[in-house]
Image 1: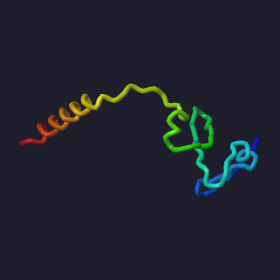
Image 2: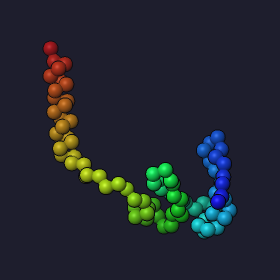
Image 3: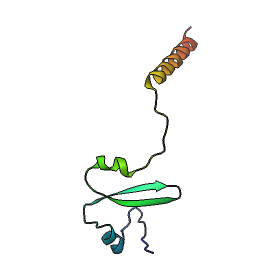
Image 4: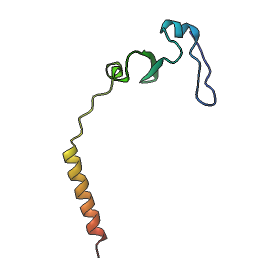
Length: 85
């Protein structure tokens, strides 16, 4: 098991054995993937677009922007009526 300390600025050093295991070099990018009470660290290879498949997200219902826009319009109209003399 490997340990590191977090500085006042929130920084830490990844232990050498872990850097070697992940084949990390200076200036490499890593990503932190939260999963409940655990966080996984992995090496980012390629571009930021490659992260799309690396990070699992909870499936949420897509936002219906037309419906959202109509709801906002109605709310604004109700508030305008309340403020009118």
